[in-house]
Image 1 (tube, rainbow, N blue to C red):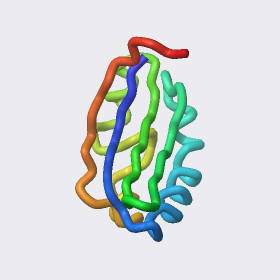
Image 2 (cartoon, rainbow, N blue to C red):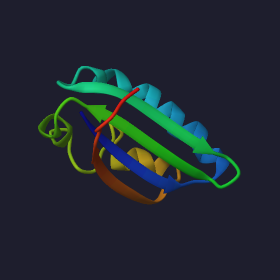
Image 3 (cartoon, rainbow, N blue to C red):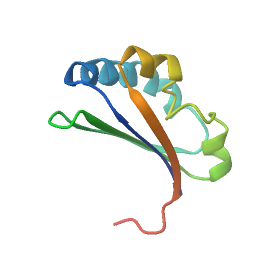
Length: 96
């Protein structure tokens, strides 16, 4: 399994828009081959958000594009006030 992890900053007001965007776009992501799950982590104190999408294979994850996280596209991150997103890819080597 593979994880796409996006770390970024936003104001607390951006979390509501980011959550709305995820709810709007996740149904389509769930239909993508290999989609295994999605997490949106937020910290209102720091304004930090972490988006994690899980995929069965690297190829399936990469098929959705480098600028997305489980169907959340770049234009949506701009609307949510996301600042300087950092995209990383990890292989899940252990799950409990």
